[in-house]
Length: 59
Image (cartoon, rainbow, N blue to C red):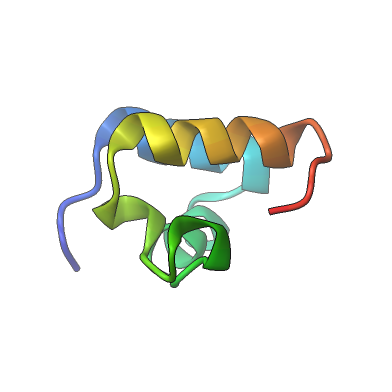
């Protein structure tokens, strides 16, 4: 597994409720990120998407 930024991982765990789900989301291609994994894009872009998800906006 590639190295995931700890700030991004912590934010994903808060949104998804546990580390396994967070890592799964971070390493799975997401359409709103152009089909890229959240762990592979700019951290700000991934954090913005997590914020949207946390507030109930579609990803």
